[in-house]
Length: 327
Image (cartoon, rainbow, N blue to C red; front, side):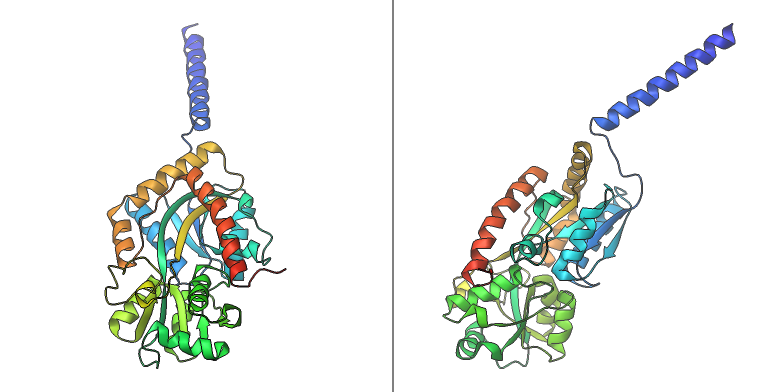
């Protein structure tokens, strides 16, 4: 009789523990149960790849999340974003920038903001417009004079996507100087790392890209940053002038957000918010921001979604302004 009571008690306690665990999971205590994929749209060494690997390292060092970086290159980021959107799995995250919106605005991808779950903004950085150190263009005005006279004579890489912030930065600079932004000779590659290779190899005349792709080469004397599209000079590039300093009234920043699949439940979003916020508060992340001239710009999931909705409207207007929207 005692044994039966004891067994019954054990079963009851086990059931209660299981019930409480299930209830706790439903109330916001979800945790990753397997290695997480951090999906990036650039080739190894590109801007998004560096960002993804920095996030991966911080989570590994703090034992917060076990993760791997997955490179899904192509379509100006569309392949990586689509991959994330189609995964019904909270263990898949994507590193996203302006092409998340511009691919749809320009009609290059059917994927919409509603097809993914914004989880948090982790930073923003201006565009650096650079040439080789031996280029005849010594200042941004030198290059814009050439573009104004013959727009197609200067080949410019904007990374992996037309219509993104890199493209907008150089196009708006050209427009502000009186050149026709619709006639620019714009090229795209697999990412910033390939732009650097082509610039240093003499295959293109200039590149507009993330500062972290050019800072090492600028400091080493193999590249010259003509201007940075920020309000003030970047602390990590104190000898690189802003466009505004040169009378070219352009400010453009590349924001970076982390996204998940559309299917994420509230408790999963809540967990990712917490883990992302902790990551952005880590000294390693602060060092990454400083080294790459990023601004700390953390936003939670709700604020990130609101920001992206507003950005969609503003970016549509800017792309229309430089003649990129189809009529």
